Each structure stands twice: as structure tokens, then as C-alpha cells.
Image 1 (cartoon, rainbow, N blue to C red):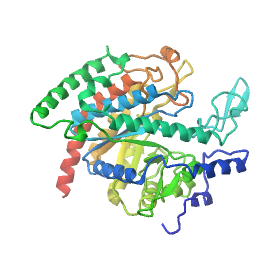
Image 2: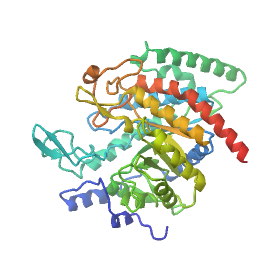
Image 3: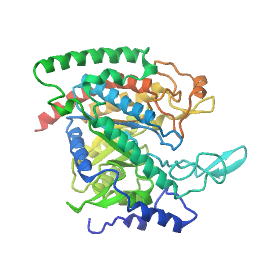
Image 4: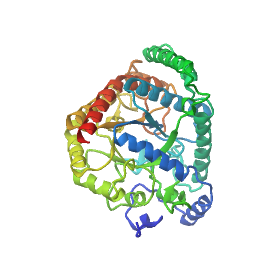
Length: 459
């Protein structure tokens, strides 16, 4: 790493980084952010990486989920709480059903910037720059709002800090105590099939806790029963901001991006000779790499070797996002290439981004059945290739939105307009996300059992 510097990414071509009209103002903002406290700490990053190493070995499962793009307008403690609740619910379903610990990572406290398929947006014959996320420009369709404004980075930092503060309070202040699992229910799912299933799971957990309590094992003496580790992540797209948030750990000399515990490189920015890969190869954070249909096996190997030359477990998470009808064509050859090279990676499934369509009503949506099909097809591919499907990466919200069609609620194209609130891509609502957790829990159990047998055979 002797030839890497915090700003060496600037010597490489970079895609999807905003073009600010006033470079001097941007530099002034970034210099100020460099003096701000870190949002996360090096020790936390190392702890997450050790948990992710267990996922590589098939001893845990990664659940990563949250908003498509956080917004300033919808910043609300209740929304943060409900997203946190939902991920706790999903992880409990997966842990109980598959008998595996779940590493919980939110797309939260910094998931603002979004790459767009087009640099411009046209409405009623008027062309303006595309909305790029609230930390860059405004979603309002007018010329002033769409000009990138460096001062928005201050508000993004402030919101991320407040969000993290609340998450830490929820995680370690008693809210996550398993004895309070009944308080995690979201009001609008009470009369759904998922609510009934979750109530049965609650009852079983309550019986198990009563037995443990009789044996002297309870949250008064075992901290792990009343707290959870909850990590943050976002796409490391806005490289000037990520650079400003990167600090050198005084105890080790390592460089950590302190804007989040985990950052990922998008399918549009994973060029081997690009600035995003260059930046990520020098930081110690766990790194995700989105893998789409255009990714060639050798390019994936080169990416892994460049970002993780020591083949460290827990460093790389490969997030496949093909679309339900393309998984069987593209995923197996990537799995084979990684296995042949002996690379230590987590294979995670993003079933959302490849299944986005435009409904007849004009809204972008994701059919729930297509999301489920992609997950099932991914698990089938890994089982047939003798690999471990170790993660799920989804866009979700704890709010009762109508953005994705289908599921037990039977949301139709006509329903989308009633509660379509996303600032960018459609999200699964709490009901759909919990339904997905129940539907795939058996797949995780089968895949985990296969993985453990394969590891034991290899050893």
C-alpha cells in the first residue's frame, strides 16, 4: 500500500461524482468536514470484519437492508426506529429458523448519493440535471434545486450523526432485549399472515427464555440477550466526502473511512482502473462489490485481488444483482472463478436492483414474486456449485408504503399511487420484507447445512 494515499483516487478516472460549479466552495466545505469527529471508529470496523469472517466460513448470515436513498425531508426518529425494528424482526426469523447468528447491517446513516442511468431528467419538454441524492442536490424539479450544493454535505453529516446516535441507543439501551420482542411489532402488520407467524415465533422464544431464566441464564447476567451489534453502510459513491471522512488510526496506522462501518462499490463504478476501486483498496473497512450481468469472471478476480491482496476473510462481500431471469446464466461462472482462485468472499444477493420495472401506471416498481424468484435462484446456484449463499441485501422501509407490487397484501399497479414515498427506487414495505424473511429461511437452512458439510469435508 506504499503507493496509496487518501487522495490518490483523484489520479484515476471517476464516474458518477458530481460536478460542482464552485470548486473553491467545495474545498472549503471538505476542509471543514475533515475537522469533524468520526462517525464510526476503527475498533468497530475491525469487530464487524471479524463477524463477516464467520459468514465467509458459513457460520453466520449477513442481512443488509434499508432505504434506497435517505432524504432530509423524511428524517424522523420514528422512521429510524421502524427500520431498526424491521431488521431486528427479519434477523430473528432467520436466526430462529436457520439456527445461525445474523450480522445486521443497515443501509442507513449515510446512504444519500445515487448513481443515475441518465445525467438529465426531462419533464414536459423541460430538461434539467438528474437528482443525485439529498447530499448533492434537491429533488424538486427546478433549475436552482438541481445545482450541486456543497453545503448539503454538512446537513448529510449532521443527519448521519443523529441517526447513528439513535441506533446506538436502540442497540444497547434495552430496546433490543429479547424479552421485549413483542414490542418490535409494527402496527400495520398486526392482521397479516406474517404477524401471526411472528407471534408464534415470539411465543417459542418466550418459552426458551423462561427455560434459560430458570437455569440462571438471563439478560441480567448475559449482555448478549439484551443488546445487538448493528452496523451502518452506504455506497461509497461521493469520493470527495469519503476522502474527507477517512482517518488514520493512531494505534495501528491503518486508514479507515469513518463515514460508515461498511461501504460498497456500485455496479456502475467498479472499473478496475477507476477512482472508486483505487480509494477502496486503501481503507480497512469491509468492502462490498455489486456484481451485475456485465461483470466478467477475470475482472471480478482482478477486483478482489486489488482490493484484498492478502485474501483477508470478511474484507470482501460480493453482492449479486442480475434480475431473476438472468441469475442462472451469469452467477455460476462467477462462483466457479472465485472458487478456483480460492478467494475468501461473502456471496450476498441483492434481489431488488435487477427487478425494477415501470408499471402501467407510470411508477417504477418491483414485483415481489420477481424479488423472491431471484433469491431462490441464487440459492439454487450456490447449492449446485457447492458454494455458500451468505447474505441478503435489500431496499426496504419500516413504513407502510405501496412501492413494490405483490406479496400477501396483493399490492397492484393501481395501488402504487396511494403511498409511493421513495426519493429514488421502490422499497419493500415491512410486510413484504418480513414475508421474504419467512419464505427464504428454509433456503438459508439448507444452504448453511450444505456449507458446513463442505467445510468439514475439506478440512
